[in-house]
Image (cartoon, rainbow, N blue to C red; front, side):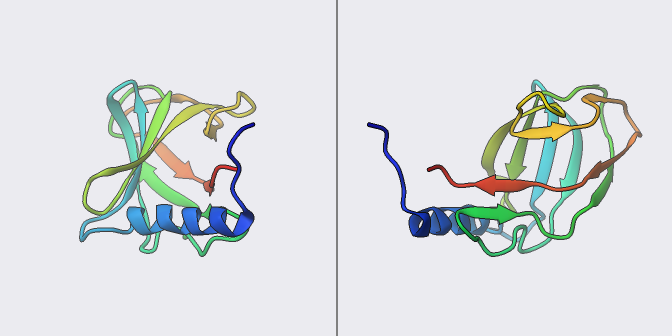
Length: 125
């Protein structure tokens, strides 16, 4: 039998993720990457996410606009806290392909205008 969490505990876990993202004095970011190459950073608000409900947190202040700093095909992302520590690592795919983050176009070019429309985190069951 797999370990499961009560909804109340999942909500605490989701709020803890947000607290980690908000730790520090710099700017938290969602970093979209091609392997280890940064393609675009989206600066996050502080707090980055709203209060958890049913184990889910939703990114605040969306959409977020940014200009791409690199060329490549997005395949992973990191959410980096205000201390520049990696809080979460995620997969990135085209819409409908099942990634943790799904984007309408994974092919990104330097100086391209990019938009982060929404992002939710769900604590594990």
